[in-house]
Length: 195
Length: 212
Image (tube, rainbow over all chains, first blue to last red; front, side, top):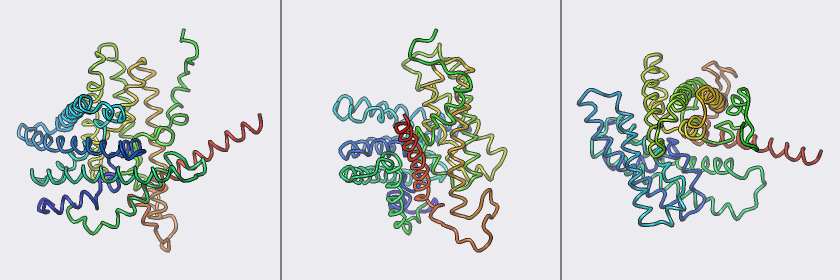
């Protein structure tokens, strides 16, 4: 596991072990923000950035916490760092792109409670990745998340134009769509050697 | 006196709220990540549900107790710290009770921290209500969540492995529907449950308008 090459880890995380479609991380924004293509992409990018920051900080924190023998503080320190990183992104967006800030609404502060972000930190710790491997893992994770979000948004924009019975409208339809997308991504399973 | 228009719920109603009318899995569609990731078997689903319920109850109690002392600006950070503390406790407790379950659930125990249900309850209910009420509501929500997880886990285990709680149901000739245990199966089963509920709701509304 620890010997997997960087490109292997990166590819496997983007496609075969896609964070959303194969590991079920970050489903709330995946279902919540994927209605429109032009909010899905920036949301993906913001999350990917927070994931990268979280992963780097988690690597340092893990070293620190293990050094002092206080493993029980690991989870708590991770979540504090993630919350601060989200605050940073929020302030940056508010200043530089108020329109986008409004479009993302409640989902922006909710990046803190996005499982994908904490998931990156926890999985890289559990798999004992080195610094470079952790970097590849978080980059791949962020890209995979953005990819899934954008694909889903594209599909849903198309679906809006189709006549549907009332009963299937809403979350049930999105879930079925996600299931099909997930089925498609299983075709990449052969790339999953970097797990 | 409660303000007009806002009905005061009895304790029983408060308890049933999470189980039926505002079921976290089927009605509010919250906490989906653990709901789909760990429900490949009924046992996993139940243990995840119970762990989440325990965290939910304790964090609701503590949030409710300190609700008058926490400044508004730092409340979310405080809630997350409280939740993270209880999750760490549960993490160690599960590892002590059953290593098998601990390994099956893996990082998803620690991911309880970011389960939207818990933070949602802390913010929307526990921070505005006295401790007893908060705990009752949290218990109901926890049980509702456990029921949701269990109905997903049971369906996926029965269809995907032909078993329930590890006991074979259909004999050796059963051809397992493996895709149900794979990630897409999780989406399909939850989607079908939601379809069923929205169909029932549609029928009920149609019946009400027809009769009267």
